[in-house]
Amino acid sequence: MNKFVRAAQTSHSLSLTAMEEASREGLRAADIEHMFLALVIDAQPAGHALRSLGIDLDSARRAVKEQHDAQLASLGIEASFPEAGRIVFHETDGYQWSPRALDVIAKSSRHRNTGDAAAVLRELVAEPSGLINDILARLDTTSEAVIERLNQHDPFAEKSAPGGGIGVLTGVSVTMRIVGSSETFVPAPLNEVWVFLADPTHVPMWDPSIGSIDSTSLDAMPGSVWEGSVWEGAAPTSHPNGKPMRIKSQFRRRSIELVAAHRPDRITWNFGYPDVARSNPVLTEFSLAATTGGTHVRISKSRPRRQGWRGLIAMPLRPIQKFLMWIAVSQTASAISRAFR
Image 1 (tube, rainbow, N blue to C red):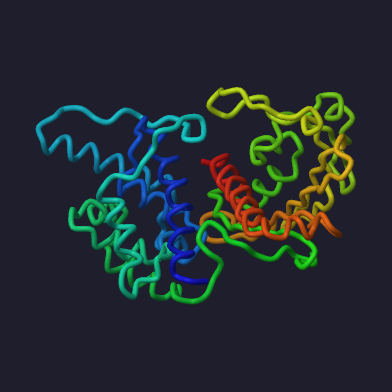
Image 2: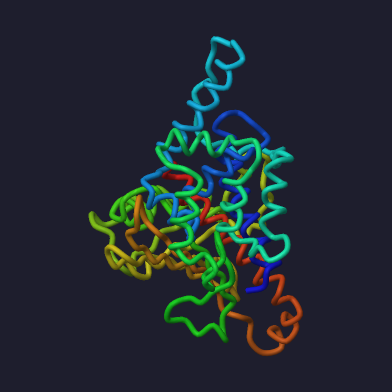
């Protein structure tokens, strides 16, 4: 993967998570402390390094708040920052990076720097304000310890891009499908994540193309979900921010099939359009693995490529189709992580 793509995907992934964390505090600008929180739950070596030092999201959030309160006290202000609420980033807009956070991201891809999350972490602990070093001290560690642990996790090895990339779907011939894949870290035990992803009632929480599940199909759901079960869903009628969404009539109804549910490490769903004659169903596969502090989830989405003359016409659009598939996978990855934060 070239440096530009790696840096772009890193920026996209960290931006989503950092701005989600900022939204909990009612902020519209994500600063370096929110970048640090995003790195704590990074799915790649940067996150592994921090979590292996015993840093989890709860302790990191607590350290950030304590540092903010200490800064107010140092100014003679007898007050504390309000308690953070839930993540509302996906329901609101107007978010951006602070200037010093942008500077960290820019430095992470300059010269020989790789532009990935590990490079961002290296620049972050060296940021001149000293804020991250103070936060690390509250977590009983130092920037030197972070860098030493990061070196042990081989950040320069060729791995999947932070937060996702174009990848391969297990068991699927990629020559006949448009495929996108992403990875995410979920701060919850493996079994809890598997149960969440295998439950059809939770599908609207992680797939933005599904707004609701028909109650009659849920009533018919067996006591224990098994492979081959099918439910009926509906497209969303509004965006998360409340704005109405226009959906053509033939795309309003969705079929939702549980293709495979192999506990505890694999789940596969198939989403189709029963009212579309030449519908290309989207296959979504989750591969789960227990890791330090939570669960590593790999998400893959694919749909068949058009064949015959339709395929020839669509060929020039394949790069755009792959990009849109990657965006869809990234949204799913973010939503799954958000559900446990």
